[in-house]
Image: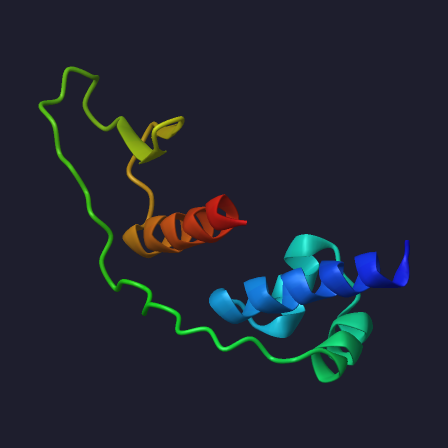
Length: 107
């Protein structure tokens, strides 16, 4: 890659990390990046001034009339994404999943 292309690549990741709720190691794992290189470029490039909105403690849930068999649950994360379960998953897991989906969707 050309020097300018490499710079843009890392600047984009530094900015995205600053907007995410992930730590540096978790962000690098999630995006297949070298943590060592991430630290190098984070020191070298200007730090983005980002005011991130606080992540919600609550996730909006809509309950519709059930026409499905008892115990089955569907979670709609977006217009094209729906997960179905035979029994209800842990609410904390659902909240983490929704936050992770939002981060990935914004990338």
